[in-house]
Length: 198
Image 1 (cartoon, rainbow, N blue to C red):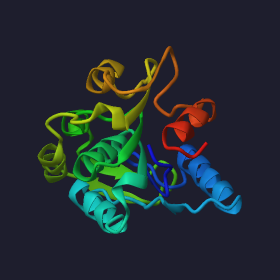
Image 2 (tube, rainbow, N blue to C red):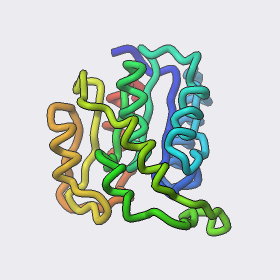
Image 3 (tube, helix red, strand yellow):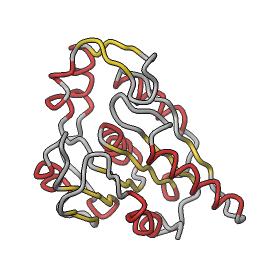
Image 4 (cartoon, rainbow, N blue to C red):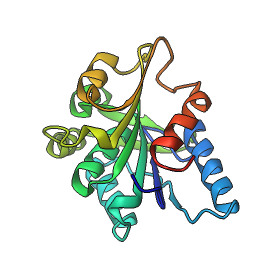
């Protein structure tokens, strides 16, 4: 595969570009740019509405070349990354990705606060759940374009669902670990290699 020229990071539910993994990826993108690599980096703050989030993602990347675009998504961001990869044909790295967020987030309906910005308050609604359901891909069409990092110790999402969805894709199935992938640094070399940035 060709080296990545455009790199997108998508954060999870209630998260932000201030998350540890997003910040680490941003630092890596900056390091690569300073070393002379031509790399476009984007890590938007996604709105609570899934339809709004996908509209922002599509708009932010509308001129990006699919063959050299890669998206890294964590949790709900991993779901959005899958939606984008299926629509565009780009590569995607998935970090403990949500597989069926319409089901897993149904219990989160109501007022929510941001993880990194407690002042950020939003209402997660039944309509948002329906937006997730409407955009859920029926299947993974080309497993080889996905790289999934899945922790069996994920305390938020069921690793079995993730593994079943991406079992035909390259990646790492980790014993233990957690939803946040606190050992993210250890997996960064594999991620960069997959997207041709190592």
